[in-house]
Amino acid sequence: MSAIVVNNLVKHFKPPKRGKSRKMGPNSTQRTMGIIRAVDDISFEVKKGEVFGFLGPNGAGKTTTIRMMTGVLKPTRGEIKILGSNAWKNQIAVKQVTGNVPELANVYLDMSGLQNLMFIGEIYGVSKQERIERGEILLKKFDLYEKRALKAKKYSKGMKQRLLLCIALMTNPKILFLDEPTSGLDVQSAKIIKDLIKEYNKEGMTIFLTTHDMEVANSLCDRIAIINHGKIISLDTPENIKKLTQEYQAIDLHLVNGVSKQEIKDLRNIIEVQEVQEGFHIIVEDIHDSICEIVDYIKTRNVKIKHLSTHKPKLEEAFLKIIEGGGKNE
Image (tube, rainbow, N blue to C red; front, side, top):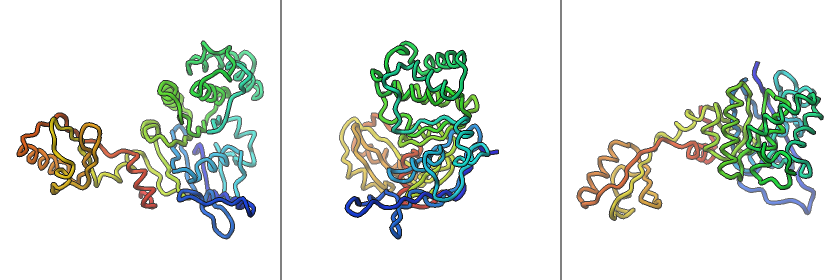
């Protein structure tokens, strides 16, 4: 049995009343016949024990989808099953096996970190002894134990986000929903969260993750779905998605002394040249032929190479290509 099954999921919103309408941006959900189609007939499955990434530009339908999956929004039509239970009709059963960290959630600011965890544990029926043990373990894992008695309103943004994850994990969920878990965080907090996502996933937890951070998606996700204008336009592993950009490859070139951007651009195998801080980022069709051509040319100019490297396609490049093309990765 899959952890999550989504079938023909649709969410329509009525447009704002006259006088309150706003211009729809290029990445906004679609408006047809007076109806805003936030999510437009999507279907996918999440396997047990995988980290499933859900990516898309602003307004693509990511948060609307995750809010339906966690029982916050009622679908217009379609079905969501969480470990076999209908997510809307069996909300209590679903909440007992899931943890959720929404993008705009906040902790109870006038409670301490430990009090936040004890309160949530009590609401969900966790015994007092288990609440104490589990709370201390989580606070230590998320590097918050030394601040456990401090009121949460005095926590930094990164500390609050870590505390939110502790709260979501107090019930020992089988599935964890994370909406932009590292957005706007300091490097230390982001690293702690990423490392612990990996740790909990290795222990068997299924994780559904939305993010704008391509490095997070690339390093954590087993598979990625890309949604745009309410529709899923690609679903595959990060490696297979990145293969979409392999028709173009890149060379980073730093020189001791000068050769102009235009001189490099005029070489036969070069597609595009971008100036970077210490040299050039060069998009090419064939790595071997292009390196040979570049080296031969700069030898004629008596120029020395400080650094030359190639790099594999990046997930960000593939993501942009898919969004711009609007087509699926088959």
